[in-house]
Image 1 (tube, rainbow, N blue to C red):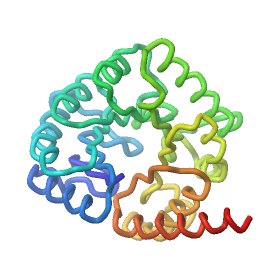
Image 2 (image 1 turned 120 degrees about the horizontal axis):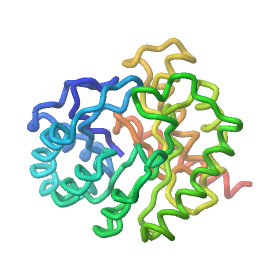
Image 3 (image 1 turned 90 degrees about the vertical axis):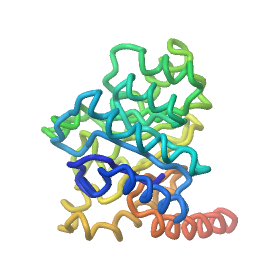
Image 4 (image 1 turned 60 degrees about the horizontal axis):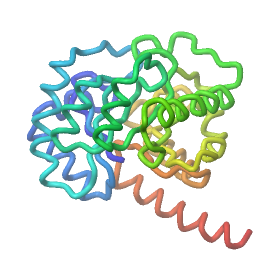
Length: 266
């Protein structure tokens, strides 16, 4: 899953692709490099990010969707927490909603849209909002707590909102309301999240916990991101969300080849 941020303040590439032409060109390049999903976002979700209004988010993403969707064969995901943005993006040709607010929803409006439009839906765990999520996040047992969240939320999606399980992807939300220790523990425990037999999405690309552990600035976090991606594939991850598609495709394909033979040997 290649990241296409059209924001001025994303931690890794904020401001680079605000121009629709530049964003479309970047997305096409990611697809050429091997991205099998393109994830378009018009609101930064970095720690401490200030929310943007619905109209501004739509202004950022809709022109890109209208130009991009006819030019690519891979599905396009809209990275949003707003039901109205999700609906407009799906109407414009997106086919997946990547919902960072799945853990804090108090109504079914987003899920009703997903059900009505038969869209893919990424249910991601986050503790708090981007503005507050890194202010002393606390868990009793991070893997068990998030596993419990998925059990509850998947039941709601299916039984109360009418979203079939074949439309759902789960994402434990690395970096979203988690400390360094929480993130490492989640990555070590990814196999726990395969029990629902739904695709597992992992996003670690250039995230701050890498810098905290290794002292690496954002632009120098690719090797660690690739290490996390390769290990995640071995533990059952199906989708790796990344800014660095070409490098990640190589890492993932190599990991897949090795793990396939390892399983045979074992």
